[in-house]
Length: 251
Ligand code: 13P
Image 1 (tube, rainbow, N blue to C red):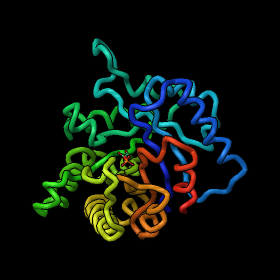
Image 2 (image 1 turned 90 degrees about the horizontal axis):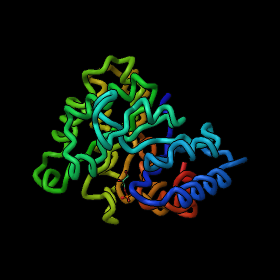
Image 3 (image 1 turned 45 degrees about the horizontal axis):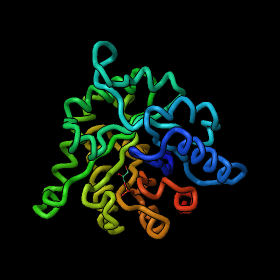
Image 4 (image 1 turned 135 degrees about the vertical axis):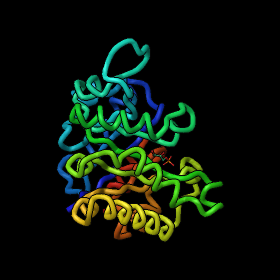
């Protein structure tokens, strides 16, 4: 059966010392507590090795927010999937809308990143989602289906089983406007049906599909109560234990 997951995406926040403090505080809050989901934090690259070294990564999974689309070589400023894996991180967020929008990531480059992540034992948290104009034009299903097909459908069923999906409607990210519970369920069910068509019921039913976009302590319970919403990818509300823990405990 698929897992419930609450993952924090710190984005470009927290210097190293602040990040280590936050990770430790979260670990302390989780220790000895029985929670009904996996908990992951997605930190900037520079935090990964130190965070992975000071926390119990069985209690809190550690994720990068990106990796290179090349294995190694003369790519100044890039960080490879192998380098991420060597820090002790187990996950990598790929295709976040901020990377697609500000850094020109395409489904074609993401396909390479996914392959390299998997080849290095990382679990991709693959983000998909439409912008407001696309939703208003009634194209949101088509946009999301294309992102999944072009970014992931080259994978074998065996490899696809290792993917976590995160539906993040771009209009809901950092805006305080959350998708309604019905909008989230409608899209998540569409995504799962898209997976059924390609990989069959068993793979589709085992795939965790997270919701992201202004998810917080007040709306998490309702969003997560939907049958096809298996957790959240949390931005702003992952930057403080007081805001993040109630989301973890929404399950
Ligand atoms: P917010 O929770 O700040 O809206 O960000 C969501 C997000 O982009 C997580 O990846």
